[in-house]
Image (cartoon, rainbow, N blue to C red; front, side):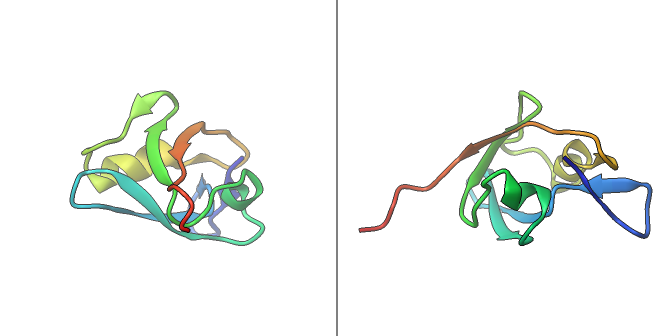
Length: 86
């Protein structure tokens, strides 16, 4: 489920991500109560695919376009959680 952006007609999932040097995207912030948090996304999770399409190595602008959509729409993220530290 998408959360609205008051400045555009597009919406996001309530997370910030960054591309690592190896080309993989990692969640660096998850908005409490946002769609990503409600879906169980955690800081440190790797985003492997969006709507079934790999995002490894794609430009960040393309990644943003794949995740954003009209308010109320859905997007499927394939995530990989890091192993527990111990």
